[in-house]
Length: 74
Image 1 (cartoon, rainbow, N blue to C red):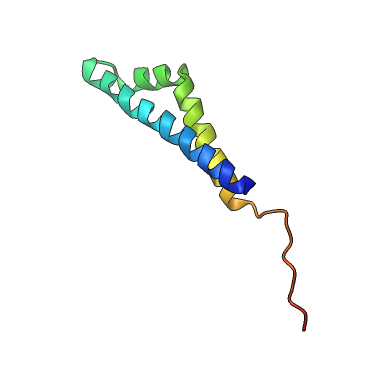
Image 2 (cartoon, rainbow, N blue to C red):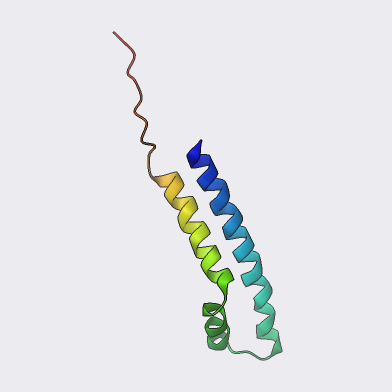
């Protein structure tokens, strides 16, 4: 159950950060160069929310649960 919580929280953070990063792509149409765009993103919290959400989701899905399964008796 706790893994489900981490997966959903990670997805929400990644979606929130990703949507903002995509919205900031409009800066390229106003004359910003791509390097200026990247420098702008480094100073924004949305980039770190996106990265934390992706890491949280991958971590929750990749690591096995600590609960051990019982083997059926023979």
